Length: 543
Image (cartoon, rainbow, N blue to C red):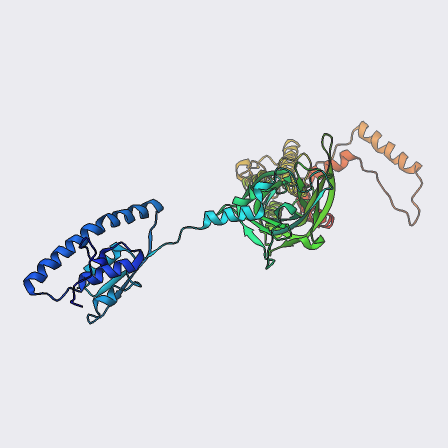
């Protein structure tokens, strides 16, 4: 070998022939870098001409490969930078395991002085779309009409239901509804989606495939609002088994109506239910049932602010519509018992205190008008505020609630305490005016000094002298004689008998008017005892 490269009949080196793949590039550039042993002047000219010839021949190939890469939309996936030793040879740097195309090879030559190499690995094409297409082909979705239910024309398809209650978000007495978040799972079999599987493993899909197959049209009866959660994606899962069994799960929040009875509010117990039913398919086409019986309804640990959940249980029934027939209906029943402690603090205890505060006026002097009137008006206004606040947080029902009975009875006690003082003040004024007109007040009586600040006279400041004896006149003598005759005609009372005198209502009223201070004395006992009796009856009935 003389060291010169072999040439063909046209004088072109054989290393420049177009050969495929990395071997072609390796052969070309190895001969380019390994120059023949020629004299220095001739060697430089030949090497320069040889390089220009090879670059001119490789340029169309590079353009062709670049356009082909643009057409296929290939992108680089990884870039790996590695430090190489300066003692490595050019032949090792240009190995097929490093440079994959012409542009990578040029980059390796540029980085020779820096001692680095760059590996470009092509990304694999995205297989998401192709995988979905393969799944649709596997399930033969295009081969069937999924607008029809499975087994159309035959017996009703059984659809099992399984519910897991995640939370009860709110319960509104004003709107008479509740909001619940739950996982609703459907189980049925569709032979059209059966597929062969050697491992007998199921396939799981999201909401994109659900829109292309048949699913049960279950809806919530008496629901006001409902939605499927969509953060970060729609909370829908579809699992298909090789034998055609399907699990369809969805996470839903629903606000439904609850017919509440507030007759015993706030000592009440409410029974609510969430009802599930097929919208289009009656019992001849679709049969809803609880998949695992009573175990089909599961709940997480639910804690509510005003209620205690006493019971959660499923039930089953039928619903009839005159135009479409009978439909299967499933019920999620739960019983709520209200916590009373909140209402004791906010309603009952303040009401009791206001009633007791109204009794303080019975111990205040009946002539202290400003004190007793202001106390009575304050308690009345406070009770009105409590009643208004409770009514604003309740629905406008047409029947009487338990809290209404207690509040209005307490308001009546407060109102009667005000009326009691009005009666005491009136009788006291009438009594003193009678004494003033009857001449029982001496002439030297100083009215300015003895009149109280309320405009009434004080009993201890008035010297009430006894009435003078009447003079002996013929009329007086006749009255005395008649009285003595009547006394002689009546038999004397025997031993052991009592003399009783029937007192008329007018006499009793006159006695009360002349002793008005006794009204306060009786009220101090009657009002507390009556209110205590009312509380005993109230709490024994509604507790």
